[in-house]
Image (cartoon, rainbow, N blue to C red; front, side, top):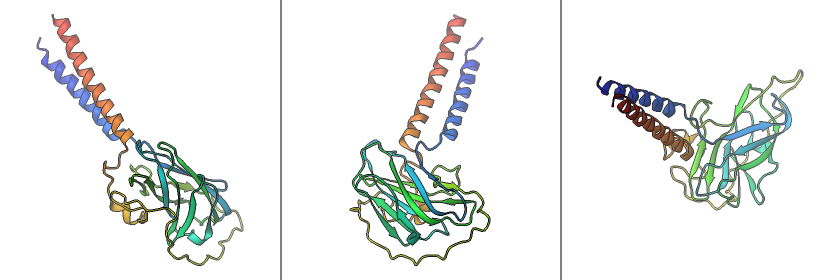
Amino acid sequence: MSRFPLSRLSVAAATAATAVLLTAVPAAAHTEVEADKAQALAENVTVSFHAEAESDTSGIKEVRVVLPEGIAPADVTYGEGPEGWKFTAVKDGYRVGGKELRTGESAEYSVVVRQLPDADEVAFKTLQTYGDGHVDRWIELDQNGDNPAPTLKLKAAAPGAKPVAPSASVEESPSPVDPTPATGASPSTSPQAADTAKDDDGGLSAAAWTGIGAGIVVAAAAVVLAVRRRGGAEG
C-alpha cells in the first residue's frame, strides 16, 4: 500500500490542529479592574487596576485611562500605586506614571471614584506605555477581542440611590512623566483615537506568538513521527 494517503491524512490533521491554535490563542496579558463596591450609583468607590507587564525588554512607565460616560475626571482621585508615581487628571480621564518599573513587573494602582454611574457595566479604555515607547492598547469594548478594555460589571443601584451633581470639568494638564515617543501612538494619545490604530504585531503579544510557534512545531513533529512509523510498519 502507498504511504501517501497516510502522509496526506497526517498533514491534514496537523493543519487543522494548527488552525485551531491560531484562532484560539488569547491575548497573553491584559489590564484588569475591580472595585470594593461594584454597584451602580455607589459613592466613594475604590477602583483597583492591575496592568500586566507584556514586554520582555522594558518596564511600564505610564498608564493612560479614558473614563467611561458618567464619571468625570474631576471626580477621580488617586489612591495607591507604585512608589514615586503621580496622578494627573486630563479632559477625558487621567494619567498615572513615573519611574519605569522593572521589566516584567505589573503596574498595580487604585483610584477613588466619587460615584459610579447608573449602568450595568463601565469600561476603562487604557493605554499602557513602556520605557522604550511601546504602547499596549486595551481599548476594545468587545470582551472577546484581542485587546479588551478593562470592564467593571455593576450590580443594580441600591433602593433610593440618586446621582450626585457632576463636578466641574478639568483642563488638560501636562503629564508628570517625561514623554517618550511611542510607535503608533504617543503616551498622550486618547484611546478613542487609537481605536483604529494597529499594534506592530497585529494585536497578539510576544507570548501569544511564541505559543503559536510552539504549536506549529508540535504539529510538524507529529506528521514526521506518523510517516516514520508507517514506513517502519510497511518495511
